[in-house]
Image (cartoon, rainbow, N blue to C red; front, side, top):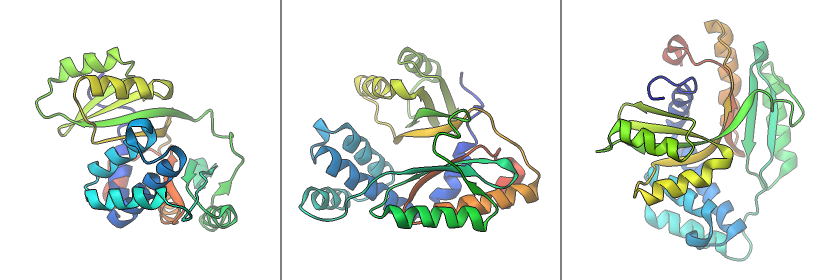
Length: 246
């Protein structure tokens, strides 16, 4: 199960996006606030907040910044977010799934539709891409002193679908319904993930020539730049040639 994953190129896309460190911090802090407002400020009784704090620490966000945003979200007033999703197609029929967090639905849908229209895509109806993507839990864990074979077997025991070791980091893929089971398994082993999230993973990817792929990635980039967008998923194969060009 270790080695090359059919989903591994998601890491290339994530790496490109995470270079925009300021935007990454904004997204993580927004998730902290949404988790607090929806489930309360106590991470022991709020699994979503516990996960958001873990991801904030993994991104090296200062502890006082984390605390300040939790306290802000716990107070009366302030932003109240909803979390819409949008589905559509980029040029060449590449499927695109967009997750947002917004305090103004009209603004968000207008912005998302504008990007699809301007860059050659088409915004579709929700549910239209359900046959293309799987909802998966994705955990990233530093290898440290962990033995690859022993760790992989422990993860399989917690219903891991695939375990990939790359450059000293394990990436563990688990079915959506087993996300909590995997969290408990890691806690029982005394292992803290660098990041943990629910992601939309394509069942298959499409390969395009370089020029066509660049047009798709331009649409993806513009969606990711929208303030209300949290994550963008797609089924374009991230070839080495495309990654180098970007």
